Image 1 (cartoon, rainbow, N blue to C red):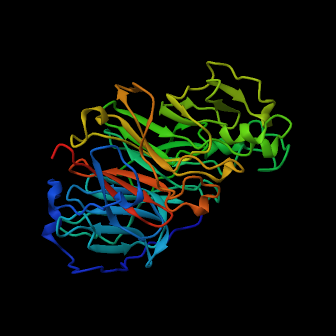
Image 2: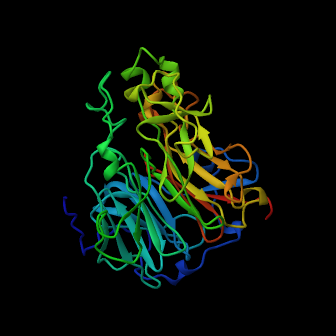
Image 3: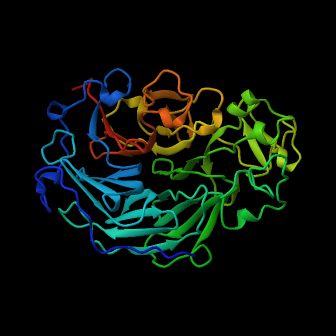
Length: 433
């Protein structure tokens, strides 16, 4: 395994009036009268009563983000910017916009979270943590290695979540599309059994406060058969773990005798799942067809687009979305700022995917799913849209923005990150104020 070097030195970028320790950041402004909302909501559309602030722009390829209880924002970057793999933002005057931006850490990554006074960061090959400092935007520069993870060059993003029992959960995606003998090769059969499942395509559990763990030493494979769950979270209301999975690609390209391009664009479903201890979610042997509402045998394993899988062999999704929307974040709303219907429900950010071509792209939005207890209580609705900046999108590279991360602020605001242009939105409900 490649070793990741962690720098003790911070590389800093000051935007305005920079101070190392700023008591002005220790309270989050809750009255929207002082907030500087963007007249166009930063280019996105929102439901009536909601407005958005562009907190920061061009900060780098922003993946997941987290907001500290004093309002400071920490953002994982998919590639280093200004020498750092994490961006730290602070609003010193209460207008909602970051006037202090700093970067630190050498490694890039996706997962980020705060737990018991530490900032945890999921790089592509490890989870490390930094000790947060009172009043200081920047944490202690010394990174502590919590868990080492496999080196891979496909679906390498390590998203993270914490439960209420001191456990850390990490997504370890499959470095493969469908576990073929020759990956992404037309007609190539699937390996049986799939050896990738031994260390990948699942969620691993670790102790959040124990350094030096590996999958073999301290790690526990919690769920399997999950191709790639960049969207991973713990629901503190239901006390359950949830994820949204990226479904497999290229059905028509690899098996044109069974699938049309139109079918391949819509299949398979992007599954929203409640993760169970030792649950099996089917990858690579099956995929979920959201139109027929059942699991189908993958063509690499004898399927023909019509052969269904046994109903009781794999865990059923709690909701299914059309193919290749690419869910990259899921967050349960626990605040009180938003209207009652949003409370305890889930927001999901869809990043969009290349694999709908030649059909128009879909996703590129944030949807809301109402919940009652552990399960959805209604269908999803689009909450935030317009990220692409165009009415019809053919190429993902032409999108103005691609939503990637979600976080809740201490006042109940919803933060959204964009890993295309590096924009951060803060969405506020203002109708009642």
